[in-house]
Length: 303
Image 1 (spheres, one colour):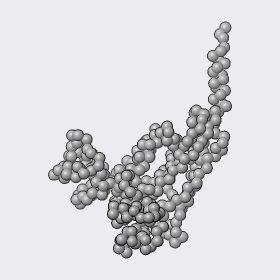
Image 2: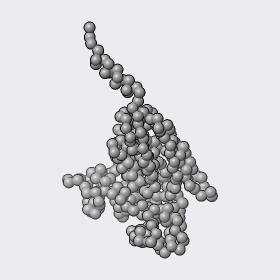
Image 3: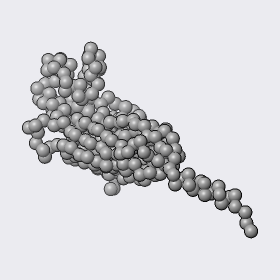
Image 4: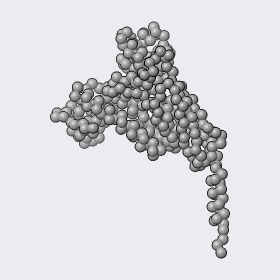
């Protein structure tokens, strides 16, 4: 996708860059389309106001960025790198919602400001998530948010679309895993939805700062945090429910491993799930036989 830098636009970009969190490299050229794309992405995450022309260019960048991030996850995963893959997935959430990953997840909700988030955090009850907002009594919610009826309707629409998904998992024959075995995990997903909800709207993302309609995408990942190793990944779309099989190869060395199952969204902050589980891997017979054969051959005498 072409991203031209218009006449006099380099000066505008230079004026936009100082307050942005990620500083540009020394000698960065504001006439360079790559520099422009970086500034527009940061402006999007910072929710910085832009001119109509720059806003249109930002929307082009956002559409391309999401495709590139999904491809980046594929490339990173093929190399078995866990932490960079998770960072790329979180970057996808940032692109869709127009927030930095360090921003409070409640800032996703329409009309929410830092002042509203501060009131929620100062409340006697713990209010940190979208689900906490949904669980408030109406009078408490009205007092905290202080929004008009129309704005409250926007908040309700977002909350109704926000994914609430139950996850259960099972590792097949977990007590019989040996080195190099194929391990199969079954993950069962169940979305909580209102009975009167239109099925065609399930999975539609509330993202007013993203320029195109968006449907949720999800990644299921099995990884070893200690070794920064990604063992398995599968990208899925989810309506009401799904049963997903994940296959990965047990480590080559016997021992006790602490693995993590991640359920990562590509569109919302704050709804990812992770589950730590133990996997005991015994020494496989074939490995022991090979070691024994090697030892026997080493001890043979030549005629």
